[in-house]
Length: 290
Image 1: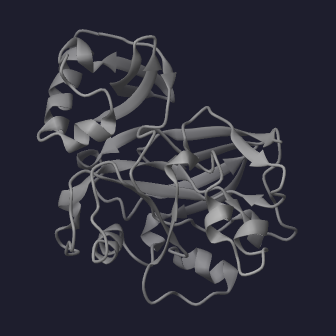
Image 2: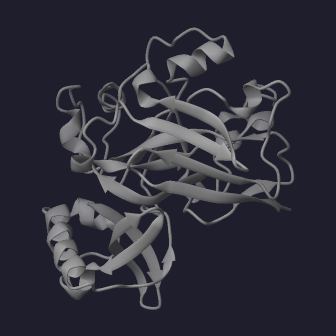
Image 3: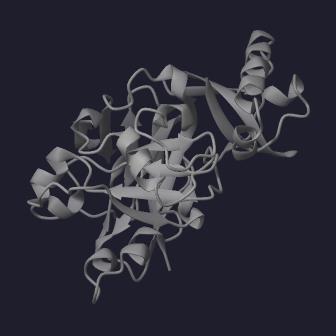
């Protein structure tokens, strides 16, 4: 099942999605389950919420109960936005850095989250803003101290993500400003929709690419993960409780702008597209933000 968040005249609404060649059709779940929460995070929190959404989606699609609106990030305000750095073997090799012994973790604020079709806005004070295609994991159940074997039970689904990074802040400022360089407004696009975990047979083996202005800049596979999704969940859940709607950016493959000669950074007018097999296309243009 594919679920998205639409902004409609009646407020935000969770909808099911059929994606045919990037032509998205949205179906009104609430026409068949009026009491279903109107936020995807709340549906995940609700006991049996995904099952109710699935039943409503089946009925809505059978009845061709369409709904229109503006597509937002699937989870516009996640409680946690966790990120894993240097998690592809081929990316570590391109940077000349040794493989880490454990997942390298950082975070973004939820204010960085935006959806497909919305602009990535570059602050005037940031001059070396990089692109990073990433697979994003969505937590579906509350968990803590989860074993690697049990981790899949707590995954609701997956979506495309773009970890936009101001390198001149992340590594160019005195002492490094990882947080500020990573969490500027609009620096965490996700979407266009969430694909439930049952549709993805092996998220640790998915082609992933980023296209910038029609040119493929990143092209790899999640089978190059240094730490699998399950290992990441096991690692971070030792220290914190993961909750429904929390999202985890799982790292980026090689081809980032910083590693190119000469470097390639995002500029106003650019269009970046992140595509992971089975997860649709996340598309964002770039704007200057004074």
